[in-house]
Amino acid sequence: MVIYMDIPMHIIAHIETAFPSKFGIPRQSGLVPTLRGTIVFAPEYRNPDAVRGLEGYSHLWLIWQFSQTFKNGGAAHGWSPTVRPPRLGGNKRVGVFATRSPNRPNAIGLSSVEIESIEYTSDRGPLIHVCGADLLDGTPIFDIKPYLPFTDSHPDARGGFADEKKGYALTVSDPDNRLAALSEADHRAVIDVLSEDPRPSYQSDPEREYGMEYGEWEIRFTVDDERGSLTVTEVQRRRK
Image 1 (cartoon, rainbow, N blue to C red):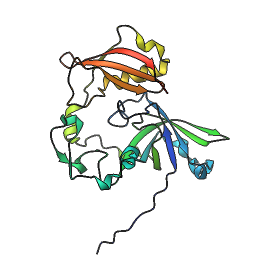
Image 2: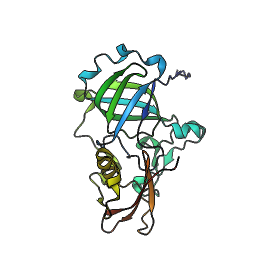
Image 3: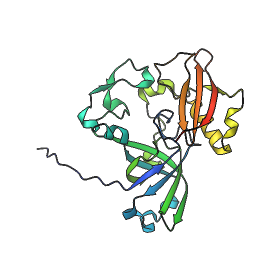
Image 4: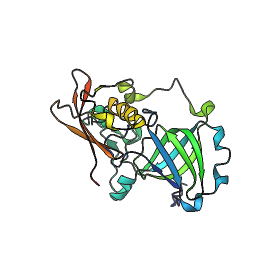
């Protein structure tokens, strides 16, 4: 007999990233290792002892909440057994459990990130600075677990339909050097994000101008699919 019960979940932390909105966030963690984020623990979990020994690991698993899905009523209220992944052009349906779509029975995400450093502060407790995160700024985190390469890595594993886009990248052009307004680190990260093609796969209008928010900046661009190129058209500070 299977017994179903409610399992209490506690938000232990949140992450600070350069993405105030979903557009532009990499589709998977680790795709853009130049992206940086900071894990900030909730006050009741800011005990330095809780991260003792973590410096011996290079990567982490983050278990987190699709907070935008949750705000819209929770995934369980609108989940479907099939979804239309953007990587398949938004036209083909596959099983929700064959994807990493946020529209699932439980709005839970899983990401693998690299530990850049651990900082101990007097006001916010231990801060974990990470690279390669694919999370919205402010995303709630349920748990942090060390990544174990001898069990968690499977180099020969099959990647299903996701393998069809493996290695795909756009050539990014900034003819007017607009990205020079960004810091060196942000410049490099934005180039890497844009090369991954932030657009949904079903959008391919070469005349359309897209906008992506990154930190304090709004970056606008066009994409020529035939040439496999992306052109930066405008960079300006975001209005607050």
